[in-house]
Length: 404
Ligand SMILES: *[C@@H]1O[C@H](CO)[C@@H](O)[C@H](O)[C@H]1NC(C)=O
Ligand SMILES: *[C@@H]1O[C@H](CO)[C@@H](O)[C@H](O)[C@H]1NC(C)=O
Ligand SMILES: *[C@@H]1O[C@H](CO)[C@@H](O)[C@H](O)[C@H]1NC(C)=O
Ligand SMILES: *[C@@H]1O[C@H](CO)[C@@H](O)[C@H](O)[C@H]1NC(C)=O
Ligand SMILES: *[C@@H]1O[C@H](CO)[C@@H](O)[C@H](O)[C@H]1NC(C)=O
Ligand SMILES: *[C@@H]1O[C@H](CO)[C@@H](O)[C@H](O)[C@H]1NC(C)=O
Ligand SMILES: *[C@@H]1O[C@H](CO)[C@@H](O)[C@H](O)[C@H]1NC(C)=O
Image (tube, rainbow, N blue to C red; front, side):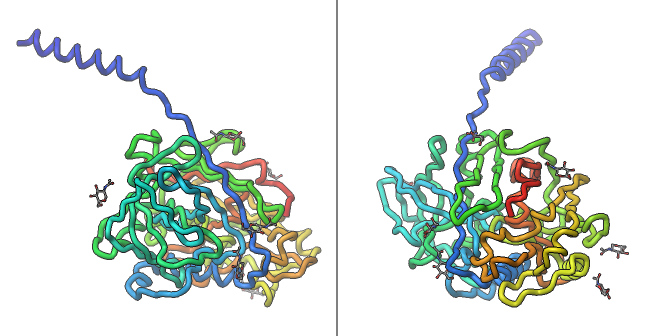
């Protein structure tokens, strides 16, 4: 008996030992992200970002109200767009890349092309973004990301109508909790593209890494999404991680705690907020924004809604320091200004200087006191790690670039 169980244990041990060396790390797959700027003129940059902030803070309430309207999730002056294949053979769709929502949508500009893998689940799906609600039919289908990643039976929403600023839909890579109650007849969550990549064994760890870079022209292919790991060629130094904040409602998103100083003067004590690729600017609580406005000497510009500073105020601008988990991420003066080559896209004047830090529209202490949008993410590599419930940042070759 004793011999039998020891033999059994030995066999198990042998299997365990034999099993570990055969584990092969799956190759990483990356997709290019194209930055599109709508230079036909979009005077509502700030208003759109603030509307999104209000919605994110108040998501449950908005859902109850069931607001409807035109889809303004894409109504930003800049968007990061990724090409995703759906069906077999796959049709490529240009999708808005969004860490602040978690449903995947197609069919808004280019009609959804059904193939033998397309399966109408018979469910309706509906998601509120900002002041608009998108509704459609829920399908499952094969989704292909780049050359290497093929997900079977990914849930996708197919737009009821057309028109979405020329885009085909959304790739929502926020936490799965944000999909709760988006199906009309069920309270269940819907596994995201990231969840399925992991559960179908296509990636080893549920990690998404994002490399953005400051814009230099209208349409730049200057970003990269990496699934299942990070790309060390895209950042400098090391990645520092912080846990998802425990503060609600920021903890429903990619929420973190941070404090902000302008030079050495504190302007925002440590508080919770989010990292969001659906927001263009950096929005901070009204009290922190007032302190920033005072410190920079900026004045509210009527045509853009942004703070405008003179060239001499720009020369004396201090670094804006974001303290996240004990690491300081410095936003240089150049990183605090809107790209001057794109002033006309937001209704500004070519020769003026506008600041990308603005007011979230409510005072601190409400559980979602800042949003680090593109203006932040174009200067720091970011890592969204579902497996370990953490967010990471690293410096890049663009951190101190003077491209703006
Ligand atoms: C990592 O980034 C480098 C430099 O941009 C690129 O050449 C390479 O293909 C990327 N690797 C992966 C796995 O995406
Ligand atoms: C189609 O969807 C239904 C409902 O979700 C599911 O039961 C069925 O297995 C799916 N069929 C295929 C071929 O994916
Ligand atoms: C650019 O913005 C204008 C005004 O908001 C809008 O009508 C147009 O559809 C947008 N174009 C693209 C390509 O997003
Ligand atoms: C940028 O991309 C949009 C959408 O594809 C297109 O309408 C626009 O003409 C492009 N602009 C430039 C300068 O290529
Ligand atoms: C930070 O908190 C301290 C203590 O409550 C307070 O005195 C100080 O004014 C706060 N600073 C900012 C920038 O809000
Ligand atoms: C801004 O400056 C004014 C005038 O110096 C001062 O009264 C006010 O307290 C300052 N506000 C903040 C938030 O620093
Ligand atoms: C950016 O510049 C600051 C100030 O000169 C310096 O301390 C920091 O190391 C630089 N960061 C990077 C990533 O180059």
